[in-house]
Amino acid sequence: MERIKDGIEHSRDFARWLAISLIVGGIMGAVGTAFHFALEWAAETRDSHPWMVLLLPASGLLIVFLYRACGIERPKGTNLLLETIREQNTLPRSMAPLISISTVITHLFGGSAGREGAVLQLGGGIAYELGRIIRLDEKDLHIITMCGMSAAFSALFGTPIAAAVFSMEVISVGIMHYSALVPCAVSSVTAYGIAAALGTNPTSYAISGIPSLSPASFAQTAGLAVLCAGLSIVFCVALHKSAAVFQRFFPNQYLRIAVGGAGVIVLALVFQTKDYLGAGTNVIVSAAAGQALPWAFALKILFTAVTLGSGFKGGEIVPTFFIGATFGCVVGPLLGLSPSFSAALGMAALFCGVTNCPMTSVIISIELFGAQGALFYFLAVAISYMLSGYYGLYHGQKILYSKFRPEYINTQSR
Image (cartoon, rainbow, N blue to C red; front, side, top):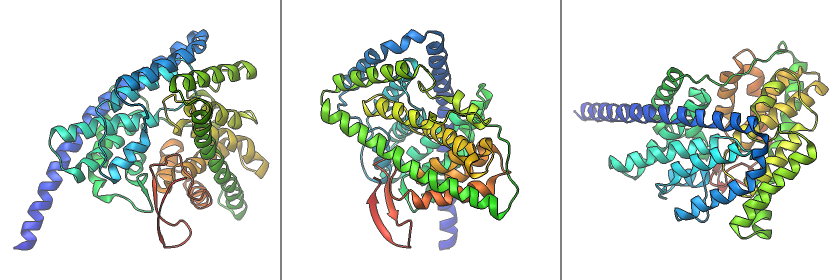
């Protein structure tokens, strides 16, 4: 009798979460697609009017004004989202509209940033608010927030499996929130289908030069992964230190973001290029094709650190892809690998190093590049995960279990 009751209860839970996930996936499929087109419009408009980058400091003032007008003086962004899922924080209702508008502003005027930080906050914020409307309890609010994150990520990038796994894996390193598996999977697939029906194309890269399986190719892959692990630490430290330096020398938010915007303009003028403005997806495509400047990865770190450190909004994952692809494209051939294939390895290894999400990293590599090089991606991701230590993009991420031994450590990402 007790087993029958359990079966009925589990069936009810399944049906309830199936319905909720379909709703979240449907909403975020449409919203994520609209956000995708908004960012495309911003990039195309900026490219058509290069002078717009000169307004970057002024656009930063607008971003600060919008946040302060909504009563948010110290926005925590994705970190607040991660903390909310793990603990009992409350997400402000203004999170989704603020991050959407401010990210489009950043891209429109040439800030060097990505988009996934925005889309995670957008999806999580909308789903969390929906959960409050339908009166979910605290624990279920955590699950529906992960649903929204998965759906929005899937709609924007077109990587539904990685999107679902990422939301379960990024919260607490060392464990997976499997209670959210069905909700995240259903919402992610639903959003992916809607985004595709509305005309978005999944993100993918054509690569070449995948080596045959041999001790030499595995050793070469391992060598590149070790270097990417070190670079991931450099990138994380650069982002965190730049934010601390800006806050120390420019405590006023308006002055801070204006100085950062001016800094990006100066960098663009000094290096006589617009490759590092916006997301830089064209550079990623070129790197995947085997072409990258030797210093491109270092300049992207610099541009992104100044942009995000001074208070502009966006994400860090697309810059991570940029840095990993260009670094791998340049360094891989020195180890005897194809520059195109090395760009893919660099993206996979660096993504894992900065997010501490090995399963997501392997899956997203396969979704972006195809399954032929899966064994190499797996090896590169594993090595980068271990050697990147406890550094990460998000201070709100908890490292629950050691990367080096089966030991519970419960420490904050550095």
